[in-house]
Length: 168
Image: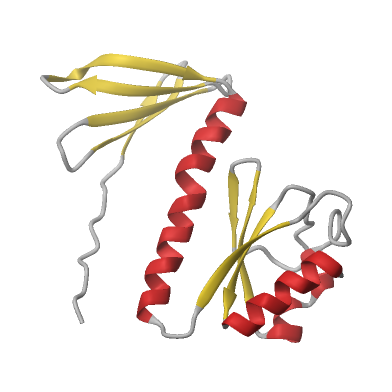
């Protein structure tokens, strides 16, 4: 079995007095990318000049909704990628992304009310809400319409969770 070597990206954090924080990293191809988190809540995505890593060649100002959308695009699929890699290593393990539809039985109820683990043996490993990932939510986590619940277990147990969250 071929093992992939985990590559760690080193993120540098710099305090910007009177502004906020800057986080930067270098991609494998040598490009520097940064996020400036302003004290006001605004975030700037910064792409640095490949020939001068101290000069920004592009800055994109993001409002809260845009930052959330970018997080959703980058974060949720990454969790699924990690789970899929785990599935390849553990035979019989699957994951499902299950939407909580507005107005259904678990919209507005604590996750523990579903008793997923007790009833099925499957685990809810994350909930994605408006672009934000809540990893390992506890039983008191209140589900909301349009949440996406990420469930891991056997094919049978995850199918049962889908039924529970859909039909109560």
